[in-house]
Amino acid sequence: MSKENFYTDKIFKMVEDGMALVTPWGILDSADKDFLSFELAFFYFFVYDYKIFSKLDNKLRARILNKFLEKIQASRPSDFKDVKDVDKYYKKRIFSYFKIIQETQKMGEFGTRCADYINTLITFSEKNNVFTGHTVEQAEKELKPQIEPNKYTEELKVLLTVSSSPLMINGIDPTEIPRDDF
Image (cartoon, rainbow, N blue to C red; front, side, top):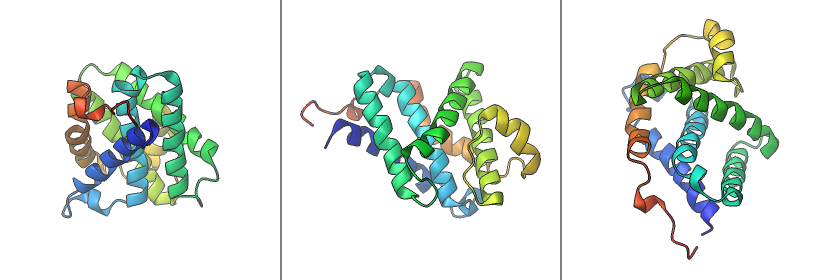
């Protein structure tokens, strides 16, 4: 297995694990699973990039990003005509998460802001049956007035905290680093 596949698989494993945390009796269970997994993939990519990928060789980091974008595009080819199309969503999401982390002082604040942002994107996407490419500022100004506020926010806060805090707080788990013999 190549290193880029190894790291990309870690992101999608986090998405899978995150989706498994959605309880059948919670409101998030009624969310459109494609929209939810799409947003979680970008969130987890940011978490991994912030803690792990940013420390890797730039060439490997670029290959990881390309593999990640290819997997998203391949999962929804009718929605994303090519990797460049997915890249537009990626850039807005990653810069938004980076802005959120710069503006927050504590892990809890970061989780709350991210949950609110993801709630806005998912709720708008579901309402209009379309993936949306808004930054956090655009979402707050343009989308929030059009959606049911905080529909999924509380459950998203729990989901994001439970699924990403160990990586964000403790740093790199030694089991996350691939052997050199890939």
